[in-house]
Image: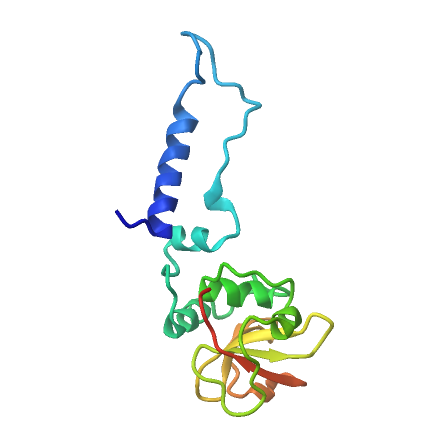
Length: 172
């Protein structure tokens, strides 16, 4: 049997539900489950699997899926100050970077400083000590946080100053 992240997550959810309703081992009739015991709830963790369980991204994300994830959140302020997190969730990546500038400087993909970023590519700017990242639309524009204070779609990478370049998008 082939297990995918969704299969494992579903099994985890079922197991957590069963554990949460079961009495502890050795409990006799009338003994209650201790209210001080906390059951792990992995579906609340900020992981790629959690997004898959929520149904808003597929297990192996595509450029179209990553762009759709961003477009579906157009106008949202939930990711302000968390551009790297937003693109990671959009691509359903398990690889975490502390910031956009760390992602740009990492060995996680070749850096390109010329040409139009292809659809789904990560696009980077050096606008602060943390940098900024978005997802290219393939036509010179991109999806990003911090577009007028929310997720938006500027038509040019010139929207932000100090454009660095791009790296291919992926769901590693």
